[in-house]
Length: 447
Image (tube, rainbow, N blue to C red; front, side, top):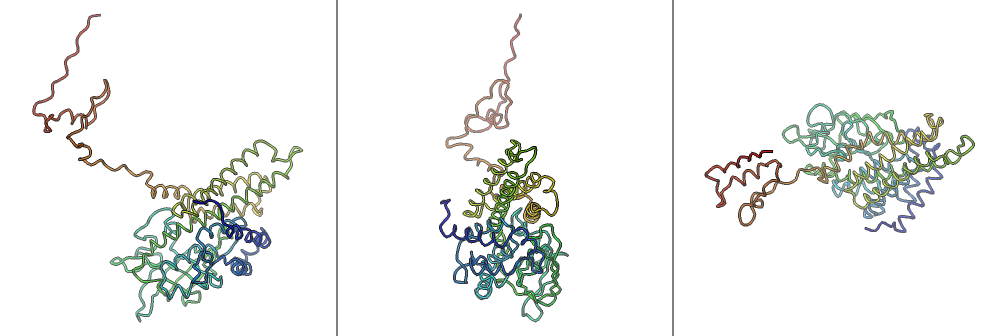
């Protein structure tokens, strides 16, 4: 593993930081999230034209830049620093990998070029508050119960009576950028109980029967929508035999590294802004940053952020570690944002202060993709940290030349069942026919 960045990666990060520094300050972020789209469309097109940001991880044959998912994660560290409201996460990190993995050649050729160019945005819709489960971030659901399971709720799909496609009906909440995306990838249950399975369907923004409502959310930089599908025509993504759950889990591993990079970027910027404030704020005739207690708190935050950044860079290289990196990054962001509010004093507690933008991002991301303890628990289960040890085969326990002798326990030590069985066995290999001799009675000693 080479931990050094390439010249191309450094150039992408430098250019992206320069553009965002000019166009994405706290005031611009607050203004962008209150537009109908929920983001600055002009800035989104600029990032697409100059850097190819939406297609940074799309193959060149489909009009993308052709970089690895690690490059997307490094770019998202910069977007996380300024809390950029954009369709980047929903389009590039969630939908593009699914279209690439499951789509037919005709679907990839038709969808990936406009997605990579930024002219088409997409959103992933899964039933209920189950995005973390669907992406296999907090647990494995091999049966796909989160998609409805044939019961009431979720989204149900049935083949069109005319044989020309599919029809969807149901409701989905908490769809990232679902109110503005021109293309929706909807996870729906089909087959009833006999052939129960989860499939992904393509739904256009102008499909008849589709109702989209933007929701009021804690973090306005991640706009969400509620979708109502009333007999909506849809196109199946790929074929009916596609491994949708496996593709979602693979997408979740890559997306977790992207999300972790965003969180680390936000945590680093929140810490930098706090350090700058405590250098200027004076109390008792001196800067509050000169007090030892404040220095200790900031030093602890610095170590937390740097540890999370190291985990993120490793996860960008090895996406299988994305879950642990996401847990580390979300925890670092939550702690840093909370301490930023504390160290800003009375002004930090006002709801309108910029520090609350980072605090809201920390809380909202943990609600959507966490919580932290479940991310860590699932990563531990996948790694087999708490798995029961495998039983020793009987042949191995017996040894190559018969039973393995069991040493006698020390005086006063309890006997185990294996030791009792070994002592009761005959040296020839069979059970002892006569009971073992009882121990001699203790001698009486006159004192």
